[in-house]
Amino acid sequence: MEIIIRRLTPDLAEDYVRFFDGTPHDQHVDEHKCYCVCWSNVDDEGTDFSTVQKRREIAKQFVTENHIQGYIAYQGDNVVGWCNANTKTDCLRCVSWRYFMAYVPVENPASGLRVKSVFCFVIAPEFKRQGIASKLLKRVCDDAFLDGFDIVEAYPYTESAQVSSDFGGYIEMYEKQGFKLTVDSEKGQVLRKRLKPE
Image (cartoon, helix red, strand yellow):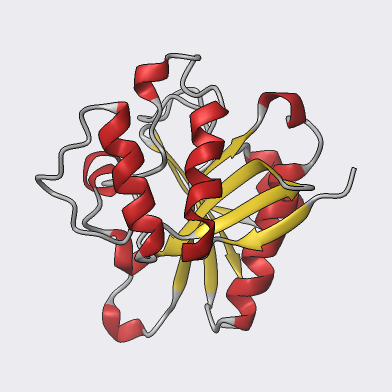
């Protein structure tokens, strides 16, 4: 099985939404399909995300305008996986950050540190447990280094976390790629991989 990882670009907006159209999400409840619109680099306060159709249309717009960023995994012409990875400081006003991420420290702008945040993974059910999330994560880290980021940060799934889904990925996957635990709170964990020496 050859898996090709591609950076999400505006011309892939249709592939992106079709993947979410057909991929079960949040315990297979269709009304809960997120299209990953709540993790973006937009100040989306007041945006109406109330229906699947609205989220789908917003997703197409956000991808076209580079507000949703990340990587798509393809097998042939079919999308089989997705990883949302964006510049941390650009996402502090998105709805999911405002609601769920109070436990995550935010860098002082004067530090000059550039942090890439890995927000979530979605893998097609028939392709789970085949290493696709790990391939997506490796590509995020490789490109973040080339793009001049200092750190890749992630928020893995934990049973006690505020967000009770496994879309953040599992801590073992991150540890295998060199991430270290930096925050361990009741609301969630933060893992970091430093790409440049301190």
